[in-house]
Length: 145
Image (cartoon, rainbow, N blue to C red; front, side, top):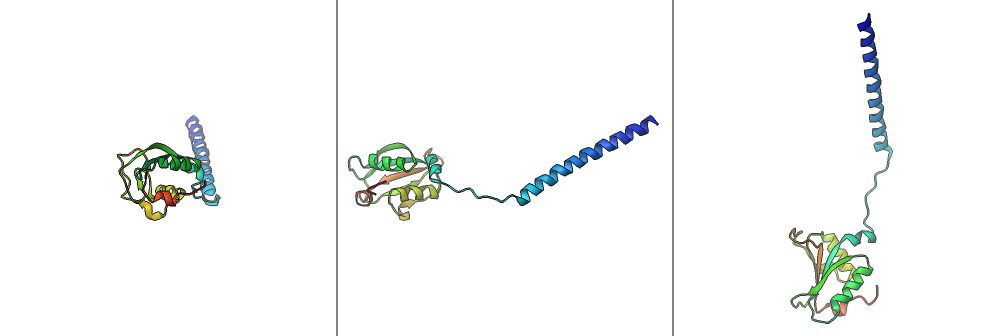
């Protein structure tokens, strides 16, 4: 008779635990089914994570510093400023970032999407985007933030 009691108690315990597991699974299914899904939207604040290198390829003193100030005011993280070999046209190169990052940087500088040069992400760079300001930038640069 004693073994029958232990068997009944074990069965009742297993049924209670099984019922609790079933309730948790149903709760998870209900939350997933009735909670609206949201798609993350990138805001201007998210651009602070885009690391940018700005290079003066026009030979005009202070042009890279001016572009750096503009990008920082617009929320980008400019981590490097320097000079580059001369170029006639400005270009925004995708490094370890995405083409979308490069397009946002180009738009912030007043350059068109045609200035974006994509060759795919380059993993040997720690920067997301490199901007080479060519001789054309002096005429296309935005005057105000």
